[in-house]
Length: 344
Ligand SMILES: [Zn+2]
Image (cartoon, rainbow, N blue to C red; front, side, top):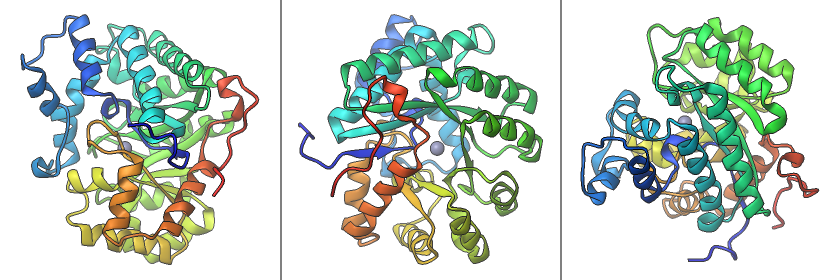
């Protein structure tokens, strides 16, 4: 169905591993000769998508059961080019996304060192470039995700590559992945500072699960532009005030949070979002990965509206914050078109 008539939208929080249409993933997997555990397309679609009926009990489960396969399939220059290309065009066709930031971890796509990281990143950028030539209405940028499962030295390698490819369309860095006992946010402070000084946007997954101390550290010391999720801040009024004062934007992903049991119920989602609104916290509505969660920014908005969690005015405000909070600079698509908030 054509979405041309819907309001132009922006999405800031999408993981490549959760964003590619299963049909395309199926073909990419076969083209590369990847041995899949299923032989029927429908079983494959089931395997890499989540539904509310088959919830994950934790982020760890999500990582092992789903991202393992999608990241493996996307682990070559050819595969990542097709994947990125498909997501940007798909977002425009399905949801009128005229601005899209897409994130991925190159180090999770190099088959543990077999593939060259630079070529993986360049292929992703080329896929993005091809998409914005085909869809000149779209502004797009890639965020490089560091990961909690890697050491600070490994993540520094990736962060430095993000800096190197800034002028080609890498717009920010992120820290992602389930909580790990071995992970230290403080050990990553120098590389966050370095990326910030270089001019990259900084977003960090924090407060998605229960570590309040880490979230406080991120807000008070690292001071990122944006935070992925930040849900547990809702339980800490002082921290909410600080997030609001610093104008840090929280990237909220309602369906993902419910599917991954981060929020236990719609009531909990309601309480979290109302706490953000009541304390003047700026936030955006995202999917975390439209295909894996079988959703879109449009569907997320409809859900929030239907459940009485947010009204139309509040949703429109979130969309304006998404356009304001983007790391994408207008020149990324080579056109003179500026990134701007859609007219009401
Ligand atoms: Zn995420």
